[in-house]
Length: 301
Image (cartoon, rainbow, N blue to C red):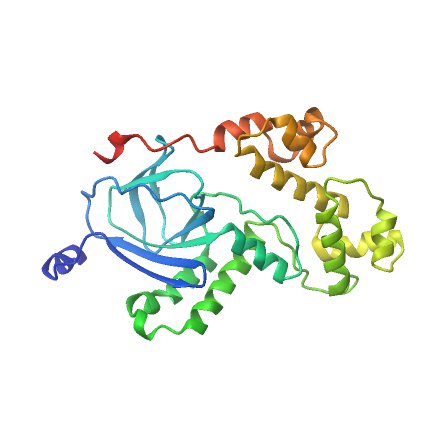
């Protein structure tokens, strides 16, 4: 008997959806053995990332973003997709599937980074179909808790979610945690340095001022900072500014106002830096990534 036949005999709705929450992170398993599912309801918008891990090979589906078909095809077992839920997403599953989705608020990602002594303006790269055996293993570890929520251990769920946050923030968020602590800043220096940079992202300051705050010479501070964070203070600050620019570009602000509020001399300066790091202009990024209203009604008909 197939999964579909077993579920039909048990009068279980198809697809099957099972969710469990740990703090403000929600984990949902969705699976079906059918080929004839209709377009799923649009995913509610949220200030969060959706991270989906495929537990089996998934041959075919369609994915719409803001009413526009953006993907048609499948994903292999252990592949991962990250999407920004400020956009409107809708999917039609055209073959059997089994996946686990983590919904992680932006605020939770950034709080985790700060708890780890990293005050970066953390965002995740939105990827599709990326093979990720680590997330596949963590998703599998949660299956018993999803299947029997009454016996699920809150401590276990919390620990798995911390592992998820650590992996995502390093692999897709660019956080750097050196394996060898030699030549790095002390924890208190890391905290002071990143707090200072984050609070001065739109103000002029000297590297000597920052080094003095950490009670180090300018040259030693620069080397130790790079060992700690995998980039120079200047590059850390640029990445922080660009992350803020991306956030503000999704709002109804003039691009020139975004540039000034993020510490750039003017719009052209911001455009040069943004384009060199992302490969596209701020205007193009805004056009591609801003939510464009509700998904077309005909998708759910």
